[in-house]
Amino acid sequence: MIVPRSPWVLLVLLACCGWIAAHDLGAHDPSDIDARCERRVQDRMFFGLQGLHGPVTDAQWQRFVAEEITPRFPEGLTVIAADGRWRDDSGRIQSESSRLVEIVRPDDDAGARRITEIVERYKSRHHQRAVLLVRAAVQACS
Image: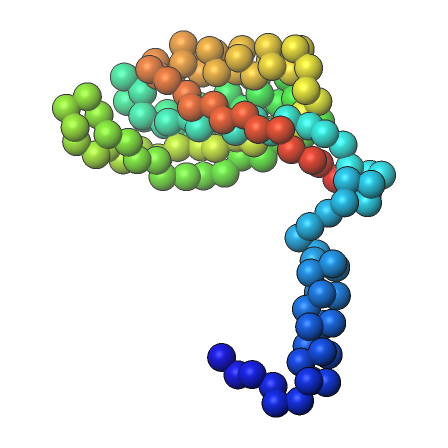
């Protein structure tokens, strides 16, 4: 560590550190939150593309998005291609192509119900044991 020899240099350095700490861009005073931001819920659904009767084709996936997801959330969603990994019942690591769907929505019962419907429809339609759902409270700004 370098220690300044002049007390004036030390004083300036301390003042700068104090200013930086007080103006940290990562720390926000709740009263400073942009008026365009709102509290929302972010749902992330992880859909495996390997069903009991073979892989879910791209056409089947696109049809599911068009028929089941988009009508329930026409305001918008994001689909990300992914490669999932998990440990099966025998302890082996498995790999599976998958899709991650993110939806940011108001925190209400109707939205939660629509998410549950999507998960259940996919499991039924494509013979899946599970669809991972991750839900978090977020601050969404437009």
